[in-house]
Length: 505
Image 1 (cartoon, rainbow, N blue to C red):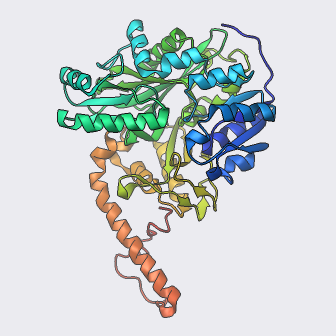
Image 2 (image 1 turned 60 degrees about the vertical axis):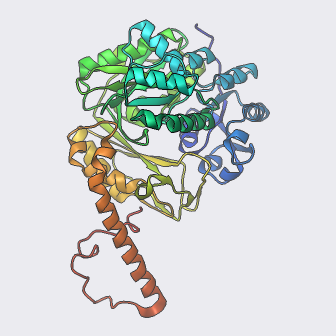
Image 3 (image 1 turned 180 degrees about the vertical axis):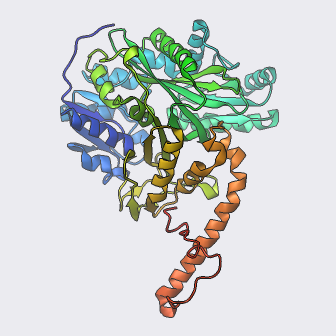
């Protein structure tokens, strides 16, 4: 398994947005030159501006640009790159891409193709977990071949059931099915979404765990047989099965449970021949029983919370491992200090079913201050395209404990200003103030359970925003209101609360 170390001097980043910027920054600190690639929609994106070199790779459609393996390999060789970092999403968990890199003499900054296939195929990963005795949610160990088979399996498992993409993650191709009547349409939609996102429409079924928590464990493995885990992350705050708020550690996990989770994650990684950074995901019930969910054979979006609590730069470690170097630490060297929370700021309208909100960012002032980190691929004047994921930036904070981390995040979100597109900022601000969130009473249906009481507030804020916009336009046209006139009783201005259009919604 061990391999000789190689020197990486130039890396092509086969991705876009904030993760491409994140990788470029890590490379700069290591003195490694960087190559960006961009579609026609990303010509003026931040990762393009930051890299040492940048090359066009085609039209906006991912299949013709960021998913085009031949183009990426060709550009990497032409630019003289030694390695390719896939980021997350797109081709990050594509074994064919890893093989194409190796065939072209390029280092793939990720796991070997065999490990990607072993764990990237979710049904194959479930079979491996069963062999190792890691608890599983009851379900199929193979993709369902037909609607009739899916119906028979669902009847045997009992509704509700969960449909999941066999080749991918991130909530794509996932559907909760509450009754047999919903199954045919859910299958059609799950297959279509999985096919579009991962190039493979296969889906499998699991029994739905009611009000579970989503807990994941970060692992690092080198090519010399060393594996460590860096503890867990709580990722239970989700919308449409996609994460919105993550934290490290989990308020539910104590030291003994962390050891059990970490041991199971490392055992799975070792059995799969895993090398590089990866994440083993679990569902956990109210009794703190955990069940293997899947393994993401790539860097996770939420990796910064682990970095802030452990002090370990995961992208730097990815590059070191890819170069053949052994891990610089053992399990006994891993220490967890304090608490970290990440909020995903997406260009979505939470008032309209989380619909994407592409457009031009007209104003952007990220939050700053002590122990506040903003991982972003955006700037004022840039355009959020309609072709890709809606993530604009990730706001991450650290605190000495969970209450202080929450207070710091609340302060940072209050400072954050973003205009031109609708974002998840109003929801994130509300979550930080929510009593159940502060008490750590979390589950993957947290927003569905708590949002009904919040929507009315959202409607009230929208009404205030409309009234404020009308008054502003009235004043602009010259009919203005006397600045000395008293504010109407109960108005947002008098209460010291800015209307939503001024709060960066």
